[in-house]
Image (cartoon, rainbow, N blue to C red; front, top):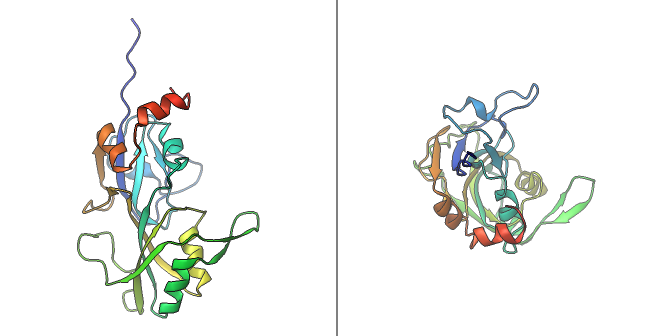
Amino acid sequence: MQETEAPNRYFIVNKPYNMVSQFVGHDIGNMLGKINFDFPEGTHAIGRLDNLSEGLLILTTNKKVTKLLFQSKVPHRRTYIIQVDACLTTENIESLRTGVNILLRGNSWWITSPCEVELIEKPDEIYNIVNTLHPRHPHKWLKMTLTEGKYHQIRKMIIAVNNKCKRLIRTSIEDLELGDLPVGEVREYTEQDFFEKLKIENYSSQIQKNHLL
C-alpha cells in the first residue's frame, strides 16, 4: 500500500538576535535547531533574516512557498522597526521614503523604490523582542514598509543617509504578523490561513499552473 504524503505545515518564529536562519551548516554557530520546538523533517526558512536581524521568520515544509511569495506579480509588503542613531533628520527620512542609492552585489548601484518610513516612539510592550542594545546611547526608532528586498537593503539604506542600523526587527509580511509572540517561540498556521494572510490568492491553482505539483 502506498503511503500517504504528510500534509505541509506552516510556522512563524520570532527569530532571536544572533541566530542564523537555517537548521544545518558547517561551523555556522547559533542556528534554528536551538529553538525548543519539534519541527517536522524538511522544515526550512523562507525569506531569511541575517543573523543580527530579528523578528518574523517563516518556516515551512512546503518547497513551493518561495516561488509563490517572491515571484508573485504583486510584491508583498514587509514591515520592520529599526533603531538608528539619534542624529537622523527629517531630510534623511524623506530621502529614505523617495529612494536612496545603495551598492548591490557585483558592485552595481541601485536606487531603492519609494517606501513607507515614519519616525515612531520606542515600540511598546507588545514588541517584547525590543530592548535597546545600547540604552544609554541616544537613538531613534523608525518603522519602514518595503515591497522590495535586496541583500541587506535596509541596513544599506540607513548607511546611505549617514546613519547606522543598530537594531532591525521584522514585524510583519502582509497580514502575517509577529504580534506578541515571544522571542524564540513558534506559532503554527493552517495552510488556508497562512496563504490568506500572505495574500497569495488561489494558491492551489498557481501551483498547478507552474507545474509544481
